[in-house]
Amino acid sequence: MSTTFQLVGLNQSTLEFTIRIEIASDKTEIHFGSKIELFWENMHKKVIQKIMKGSFKQSDRLYSSILISYVKNVSTKSLDYVNSLPDVSSKPTETTQTGVDKGILVFLSYATKDAPLFRIKEIAEELTKFPEIFDVLYWQEDMQDNIIEYMNDNLGRCHVVLLFSSPNALDSEPVKKEWTAADAMGKPILPIFLKPDHIPPLLRSRLGVEFDQFDFKKNITAIFELIIKKSQS
Image: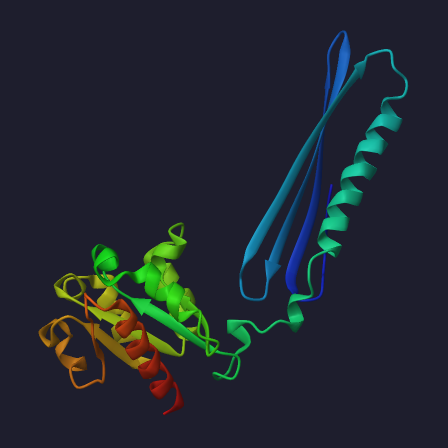
């Protein structure tokens, strides 16, 4: 059996119970499972599953009470867990933002081969330390997603795009799709480059940051200041 219910701040929540009874000559086994699927407004999803098993002699006439006890136990625990979740409707989420009042959402566009060169993960971590920045999105952080699907899901909601320009990026079809789509949507695109020649020709007039491989802190400061400048323009 299954039931679907609504909770504050959730698009949909499904609580599903499954029961399987295996009868043998000497004993009967009950397999009881519960599954909760939570769908937040920002498309995040969480699944909680629990399976319990009990066995008793074939002659035991209390099997019905045992089954009921299992159902009550897991049902109560499952609902208690759901009810303990915070009210996410009161939290600022990137999908509800129409501007940058709640913080700036930054999208990183780069060739996967260049992640170590530009220290992508560290840049994301450092930028999110600034209170002005709500979050930094980059595909390597969500490897279970197809890169094109990730772009479709996240590019439209960002406020600023950092384009890490390199020969690898110039040859990357996903990177090209990201910056051309961002440009079509009117998103500010900030080139981060080692050499100006690595920037796509159509974007070379854009204000960017020359990446210093020997001064990471300088890079973070320059990138942050440019993000703020472009977000306010």
